[in-house]
Length: 491
Image (cartoon, rainbow, N blue to C red; front, side, top):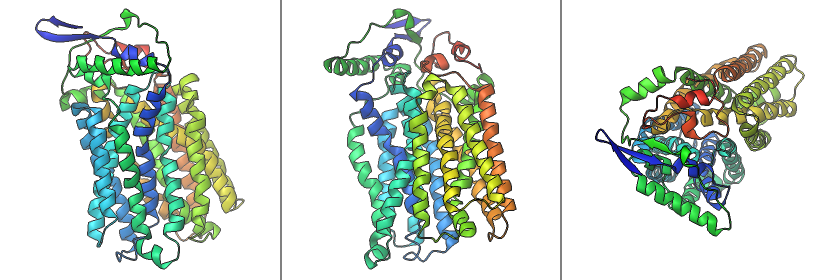
């Protein structure tokens, strides 16, 4: 329904309520399959590049190999910031098609590199595509998945990064084997694996609709209603009964095509300062811990436990499995026990396990296997917590700047986390002393515990709540952010 008030065009819509009352169906599996592959591709990319099969062919030093990874991460930051704003302005669907295409080109052409500078250019482009994916995809998933399932789905999808990392490690066992073929072409084939998967997924994405919520708030109510009509028709055709939606749940909005930067800043700094502090704390703490451990675990295994370079891959698999299982097993609890309790629990438990391992490490009571077991347990919890950080920043701010919120917090988290590998690498040194690294592990444990406590105090009870009740859309008529109070810890 479209009404007019003092010349302003207003829309009264049941679109959010209709989307949230849907049962779990084939449509939602299509959304997960079509959109959730982004994190698999990111994990695959990082693992393929981390093994540096291209180092010999492109005549690169170890420092230049490390810089290759940094360039990819910088591309992610730039892509997230640039495409995050476009996702809010132009729509989720346009961006999740565009960003995947950019990734396909960047990674695929990078596999044809004949010189270091050529590889760096296309690693940056591939990173931009993946960074843009994070913003557009998280936004679309949260807006298309019913509120009762949003937490577990978002956390599980973010956790599939580790499925991609395990896939990359498996591929490297064959592609980087000590054979003439692998030495010449193996690393290049590794760069083509992601684009091959992406070509399949881009076809699926063509059939995923634009977010009806985004359409509703951008003056395209007829398209929003039509999209929901089609979704509901397919669900009814599959034999599901859909209850009627109470008209009292209608949302009245005045379409807002674009949000100026001044208003974006006001939302983060004046309207929701506590939520901004919460999002920053969660993203920075999890990024610090992950970068500290993930980028140095190979050095720890080599320097302190004498594991050969070729043997490190086999220790990586259980590490990846622990990270993958955490979000899958614990994800549903974020929708039942609740966001604040589960975020606190996963952050605190990961910190506790890491602290215990630090004491045992310093005492010389661990070997490579038991050290890996401790990492697996710690990151079983930390992975679910880290995934919940992305969920949190994507659902606690108004719909019109969801993509930008994800991009800003993601970028700040990545930049802050970039300090950790350098810091922990210096703590490892030549492996002659365990004290500095043990202190580093205690620091990581304290950082995660602090993140959990902040979430417990400032967190938002967003479980099973509609996005519009967690934070009023900026376009809501007479909004005033009343939804913040209903969802928990306020602004």
